Length: 345
Ligand SMILES: Nc1ncnc2c1ncn2[C@@H]1O[C@H](COP(=O)(O)OP(=O)(O)OP(=O)(O)O)[C@@H](O)[C@H]1O
Image (cartoon, rainbow, N blue to C red; front, side, top):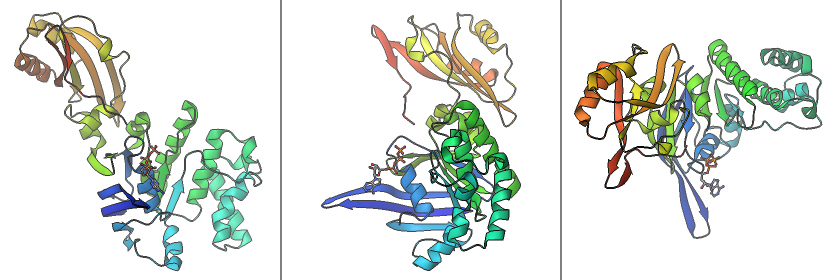
């Protein structure tokens, strides 16, 4: 379990001071997967570096499995580090060492004897599905296989917490899937607490229990994945929703455009026809995307409606269909005024 309280990190460069993390409060329960998302420069990697003790926080507290990490002395730090495994983007492997030898590195540093080390490496290779490739060098492995070596190496010292910093970036979709499946398995089998940093919203939807959004060094929104996905008011929820094919901006016509989010599991496939009938007006489906996440139906769509329909009626008919809606664009003098906001992840 990770508990972060009022964590701040400042950098100073001569007279210039920058606050990169500003009073962060976060917790990840044992066996839980928390995804941290946010735009480039938000402070995500700095947060990961504070947790795995590669960087010292300026103030605040980080407790991992009951141990306060800030303020530890060097020898104590070495011990505490064992409980935290880190997977980095495009795992760095030593090019002159085989997969097995790379995985053995942390065990060597800890002075684990040869026989025990070899047994543990074999066990780890099997766990990540690379037993056949033990003696291959990094250049003889695919990107996905190298990432699996990185995961095995992160697990070598039996950590209770895994930090994954952009663990799937640069991998092709098949390898992304296999890394996701492996992380899920590790949480299931080993009860690992996982904090992952990612730009990949699909990965978040597939694996995260909770999500936090970091911006300019602050957590500006967080919550359980499914709660966020069905909340049309949630910016983070909107970011997380599967992208519909097509873009709201490419819509022609002078009507009003609504974004519609599935608010329950019982949305009838015929909702569009039902709304057409109820409103007695032309309702056009512009974009739509539906996915089943943890056995819940999650989806959203954009629809266009005639400009003169009252908002309250539209909202009511949508809600009768188990849908939540909000106005994305409405016609204004001679043009279309954007109501919704696009944000960067
Ligand atoms: N050692 C450092 N000294 C000064 N500033 C730093 C240092 N490390 C990071 N920063 C600054 O802190 C901010 C956050 O960087 P960080 O790498 O944590 O962002 P990030 O959210 O991980 O971004 P990305 O998604 O691009 O990896 C950036 O503005 C960066 O320039």
